[in-house]
Every structure is written in C-alpha cells, then in structure tokens.
Length: 202
Image 1 (cartoon, rainbow, N blue to C red):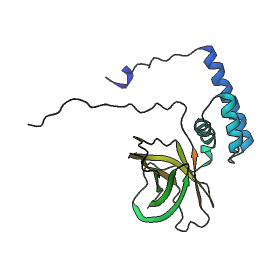
Image 2 (image 1 turned 180 degrees about the vertical axis):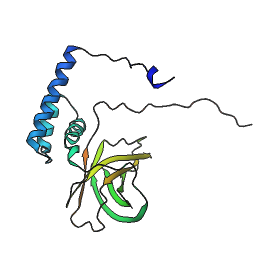
Image 3 (image 1 turned 120 degrees about the vertical axis):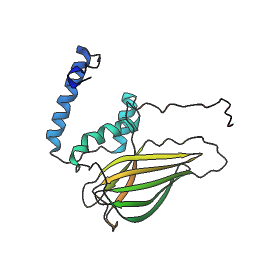
Image 4 (image 1 turned 45 degrees about the vertical axis):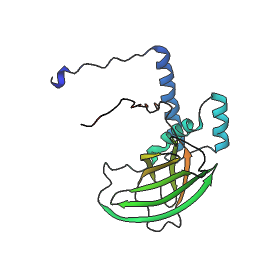
C-alpha cells in the first residue's frame, strides 16, 4: 500500500466539542501573551481549591499547568548522548510512611538521567504495586526541562528515572529538587495480566 492509499482514521467530532476546543485555544493564546515566556504556576492551596471545585485530581491539574509552561524550556534532544560520568546526589526525605531518595544522576553529553528510589518503611504492610503519580521539578541557575524516563518496582518499592535537559551542573549547591503530583487526565491505568495456566517444560 502506497502513501496515497492511506485512509483517514475515523474520528468523532461535533459542534459542542468544537466550541470547547476553540475556547481552550483562545485561553491558551491569552495566557501565552500574558506570560511572555515566563513560567507561571499557582500555589498548591489554589490548586487544591480548583481540585475540590471541579472534582479533578491534583496530579491532573498539575499536568495541565506544567504543560502550559513547557514551551519555556529548552528543546530536548532525541538521545542523551555518550555517558560522561555519574553524579552522586543522595538526598532523602520521608512523607506519609514512604522514604524518597534521589540517589544519583547519570551525566550524558546532552542531558542527565536522575534516579529516585521510593520505599514503604513499614515492613508489615503488604503492597503489591506502588504507582507514583509524580514529576521531578528541578530549579536553580537556569530553566530545566524534565520528563519521565521510566519506572519499575513492586512489593512496596519503586524506582523512577527522569530525563533532565540541559545536564545538571556537577556542583548542586544552587540546584533544588522536588516531586510534585503529576498525571495525565487521559492516562489509561495499566492492564493487569493474570497468568494462571499450568505450564510444563518437557
């Protein structure tokens, strides 16, 4: 099948949705004009008030507001480049029975990959899977762009990695890290696959 034979993907659309979309575009244009390239983000008590008023989750609101600010950050390269060295960070904190540790950053030519370990401190609690809806925020010196790079774990532990552009400086005295609630409102929960058939190896 040649390119000319590609058919249009079926798509549902109507006037009601079109009006909402146009309003969103008008508001986005107005916000961009007022921001003039600067980053604007409301305090968390305002975000909490909006979450209550509009029956939305805070991670979803943070996702939207961070998306509006993303154009102010440098463009991310497709590849981080060659590994240069490993930057130890080792910052720890505890919140609601979970320990959060930023362990290190793999320093590449074009970006850094920051690793965060999360573990449940109470050993007697049985948790099958921890699903963090979090985004790393990096501030200090210059604007940094951050995106999720991967996650894994189980049994009350999880590990997250984030791609940070440009590279973190080797001296972190003026760099600050935090995790904020963050989740796409269109995110589909991962599908659970149950393997319960007998398997024999002959």
